Each structure stands twice: as C-alpha cells, then as structure tokens.
Length: 296
Image (tube, rainbow, N blue to C red; front, side, top):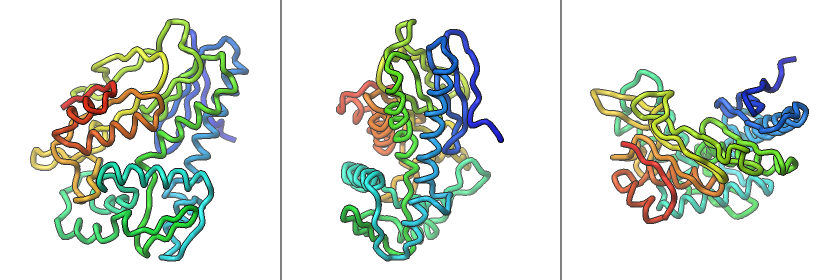
C-alpha cells in the first residue's frame, strides 16, 4: 500500500508532503515529536482528500457529479454543500456575475497549458448558453440546475480545504503549523519560535523564484494569477481566470495578485476578485483595505 504522505525532518520542522486536488500539498509542524507531526500530517492529508472526493467534478462518486447529472431535476444537498453554494451565490452577487460556479464549461474552449489557439467567438457564445447562476433555482437545501449546465467548486474548493484542515489541526493547539495547498496557505497554532513563517511570493518573471518574502505570524495568504496557467498566442497572454459574463479571460488583469487575510477563503476571494477587476485591481484592493502584493 502506498503511503498517504511523505514525512521528513527539515531543520526545526517536520514537513509532510502529499498530493491532493491536483496540487502539491504540505504541512510544516514545529515539534520534536515525530508521532505528533505524523498525526497532524495524516489529519491534513485525510481532510484534503475528503474535500477532493466529495467536491471534485472529475469523480463520478462526488456530490458535484450527482448535481451535474441531475438533468434538470431538483436534487437535495447536505449542509456542507449548501454552505458552499450559499458562499458561491454571495460571490456571484458581489461580482455582478463575473464569478460564477457554472462557468466551468468554458474549459471546453479554453485549454490552458496546452498549445492552442484562442476559441472563436461562436464557440464561446455557444458555451455561454450553459453559463449563468441566475438560471439555477437554489432554494436551500434543494438545487435545480437546468439540463446541460454544470457547477464547479474549483474557484473556492482549495481555499476551503485549507481552512477546514486548520480547524482540524486545532487538536494540537500548542504546535505551530503551516498548511500549504498549492500555494494557498494558512497558519495553525501559535507563531513559530523564529517569530514568523517565511513565505515567498513567486516572481512573475522567473517561475520558481520568490520576488518577495512575507513574514506571516497568523492568518492566510492566497494567490491568483497567470504564471502557471495561461496560453500565449501572437504575443498576447490569456490568463486562466475567466470573466463569466463574457466567457473570455479578464481583460487587463495583473499577472499575479497575492492577498493576506484572516482565512484562506477570504484571501482567495479577494485575490480572485481583484483579477476580475482587470485594470482596476489595485484600486479595488486599496479600497477594500487588504494587505496585498500586485504584479503586472
């Protein structure tokens, strides 16, 4: 049987590494007790994979698959799923529809990371007939999604998994820990003995290198951007964050936005919404009063 994660000593920390939600994940635990570190990492890996199993659109046994295959029939959902649907609805309203969990079908037009040409306006227009949360009938706990439409929690799921994992790690309140799922991260427990976690923000000019180092004592960081998921055609770069109102990547968006907040979900929300603001991203972040790093 394959181990669920790899654990090794890294200076003053134990580092547990695993893969979930198509992302490299890690947990840093400042403890001399290997048994405690192993228990914490097992807890983190189990929660990340639970969220993935339940909410992945790629699994035929997930809640998302059941919703997407309902073919216009009403379907009842559990409390956890209902809470995420409520959260997604709030984001949809706050952004006047630019953030929309039904926009995942646009992946059929935009294949980021693959050699490609931009889709035709006709292709996007055809897919847009299947986009629009206003077409769904969400009356908690029952959702009726028109036949042919889909939902996708990809825009909020990873940050949700980070926050849930931190909640579970509260069983070890005296152990400083950092939960990092694919670059979206949050602290757990007290600050480390060094006083702060050293967190690098990846450079938009040199992948894998840090352009800034953040001293994080508490709270979370999340990043949105096009450094890893994009296509470039005829000198124009198309980022992977799609404006659900148009079906096209957000225009004049920054290359990268990182936001610090109390929770990973909050940080991820602000970073994504800033990208969707395009040329007004910095103005939006300043108006919201959040700590941020924006690169163009």
